[in-house]
Image 1 (cartoon, one colour):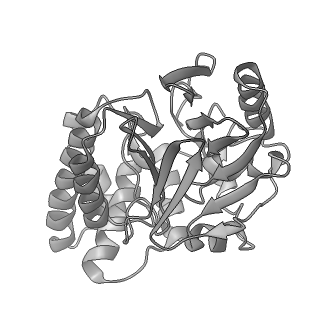
Image 2: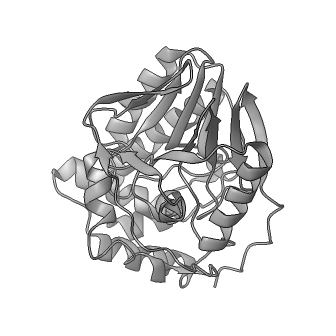
Length: 304
């Protein structure tokens, strides 16, 4: 049985540009995501919220410490609960994302994944689907600051990822396209799609990246994620050719070169995603959950 992780240090706001603050929730593990506040002359924009009612309230308290302007727009980088559970708590705000995010948030099984995790006290995490969706790109304005929202045009971490590019500040808000210090997670996503998306991010040459989890970083995090994805594709291809199941492959693959990354149990999840891509099928999420439980020894511990 995996032990409950040690309690992480307190979340904090980090200034990443004039009027732009990243809300960092250490240690960036399961359901400990980052959010970003973009303050403007009349209103503010939040990129994502948090996993629980209490954590979203703590984020809102930090927002109030920085600005007295209301958050009028909440951008969801994708549908996963750590980034969307608290969206409804921004009363009066317009939620913006990709249509796939809206579809997944409003499905009856939006909370079906929660029993996979042990520890969080979720509180009020009712679904709040985006009222504004876009297929490829959408440009927001915060005063004179451009906030370019982009969908990669393909599956990556999920099928509905959105990242935000602040061209004048050269700051990129990646959502879970990047986990700084954590194992990348595909599950329902695409390893080759994420690779191509990371190439596009690299071409933008951001000065600073706010990842979905972990500390703000530079392009070294893109390089590290790319390295992992190329590796997982290689080992998955070999295991698939040998006829190994994702679970058997996860138990036999030597992943020691990535021993420094959090969430090593994502290996089996990522193998499921690779196998599905090789076979042109979709991931059996029930089997993925069962295999993850087998690796962890039960529900996944989270400090959220």
